[in-house]
Image 1: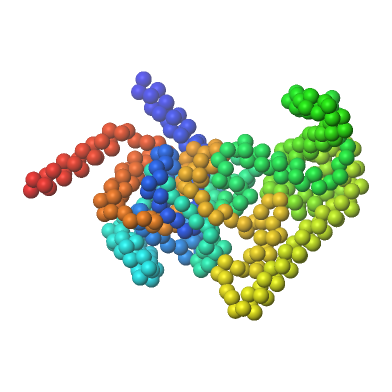
Image 2: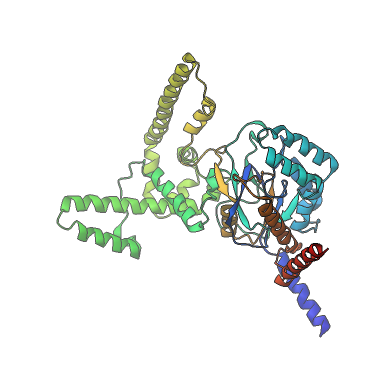
Length: 454
């Protein structure tokens, strides 16, 4: 009987190891939102360089260099390193918990003492008492700010996927490659997978509407819902025959465009290396008569390849229209720069090079286009919508608070965080029993009473 129970335990242990897991590293400015509670999930573990609320974080010019050295060893890449993802967070914490690292940390933040005396003093105290570099489960929200592109943050704003295990992507994100989820193209502010898909499809339809596709789809192959919508149109415009004909024609063209977008979107990884599509990439594929793109356009409607192939002039027109529109705005910006220079005006928000890049973004955003802000809760919701169960976050951001916080409130938050840290199952991330929490709280209360009596 004992051997059977032991075998069952081993099976369950093995099943736990197979939970979809992700480890990400976040480089950004940050603030703790101590008044915004979030759902506690012990499968979400954060390593914080800052450690506790009200503290500054610290990054250098290559913030992920250390992380890459720790994670991308030959043993780990080839599956020979059996350490859990929690143990990897511990390795990160251990690396940063050294006298040299602490000394550099203190030197860096004391430069801000005149501007942020309370946060600096509190951070120095936390470092000296070795309460920084903590791993815990979040219980209130946090705001990440990616708007700074100066100093150590230049080119470093990121939510980088370090490692995934036992996961099959539900969307068009290829987690096998190192990617920066802070790029706008990933749309991580939207936690609903179905809505992200819907937005993708609409972008494709908008693109194909630029072509003069005058042929419509036969009504006989409309699906049930489309036939109902078409009947509703006939009833609505029954007394206006000329408008009815136009509406039906538009509807049938739109139905065909939806088929295009669906076929291309579902097969995007066979056409585009990273699975993401820009208008520029689509135009380039359309210019190539041997492109796989045509295979998915002509799955249902073979005549449409000929229509688009014959419309090469339209492809050129679209490219020229985009260039002309961009050039007009660039000329306008150049005039604004000249005027500013003539008046000796400066604007910290005006960077011509960045403005030009922004203007060239089409359909999707350029690779360098980063989201401005996002909450921790939104990141967690997004990753869960992608199917991840265990979420590890390496966080380099500050944990300052944009309000006055009493010493008593800080103490309560820090004690709560300590409890949440102790309740992490270091192997998998499942919550320990609530009994342990109650006992610990009771011991603290009893200890307090004894001190009072003394």
